[in-house]
Image 1: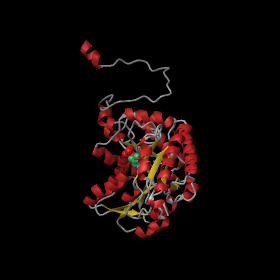
Image 2 (image 1 turned 90 degrees about the horizontal axis):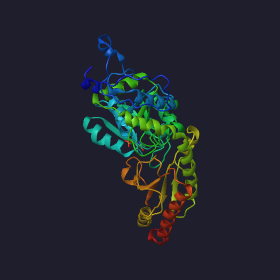
Image 3 (image 1 turned 45 degrees about the horizontal axis):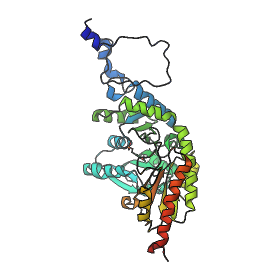
Image 4 (image 1 turned 135 degrees about the vertical axis):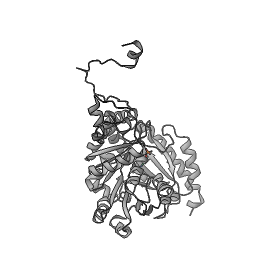
Length: 397
Ligand SMILES: *Cc1c(COP(=O)(O)O)cnc(C)c1O
């Protein structure tokens, strides 16, 4: 073999005795075959075999298998983002003339996908009150093929009565999919409640370090998986093994991270409920949050994201105080090690149920910093808001 060829052929080395606790990162575009017989039979390898790097590597399959196990499903599919997981389902199962039902508190880009992409292609959508429960029956028409769920809504925290909605869907042969990003499979398992698609934005708690974008779809029916895989294969969608490796690292600490942020978030939510500038705290584990009874019935825990409604008149003071925070960062994509706080605007995003609250709305994601440092920021922000609300004419009666 000439040197030039040696440069291209990596020599075999023994792997005997090499056992590591980590998952190797298998990078590949092309997959090669031992002989012509296996090359000619490659078409029969199916979606569980290896045919092209885009369709899966041992690294991505390990992550898929781990998510499948956590969800109690049969297969998972990785996508380049959480949003892509949601749209892959809609692109696969909705045809012109069909309709999808989405909750009013859905992750914003889901609504945009329905209005900007689906609707011009003759796929209709109806936005429903997330607390509708069995009342969803009234929205069922022969065109409805998919009911989308997000529980709790990651902005405004309404917990849905998923078993009631699933019962209606099943009676009509309608598929259901649930964005489970807030809960993760550690706090809620949608498939166990009859949901067809459990979606996670791995970008959040599974990645856990604000350094990757990925999504997953888990199903308990292999046929559903085949259909989605066909569509994402045809669209040319896959994920990089390097990012899957990051997610495989993140998932190892997820349970400990969530136990911690869940405890701190609930503690802060409770304390904030007593703050005079706070109109209301929305946290699924707090009585009074819409659907709290379903959280108690169906969930096994809570994560680190919750929302605080402030009195009207506190806007300017709040903005100033947020800019002055020492430990929290201002940002939206939660689930990492850093705590985040940022205003959200449910008022502009609702169409089924009007958002009545007039004051500012702040979403808090608890990270892994020392609790005392975090509380110092929280106390400053919400006390600053208090002095403002006392001076505000909206509060002066
Ligand atoms: C972040 C998020 C998504 C989207 O995930 P990306 O990976 O950012 O596309 C979907 N749903 C919820 C609830 C989210 O928080």
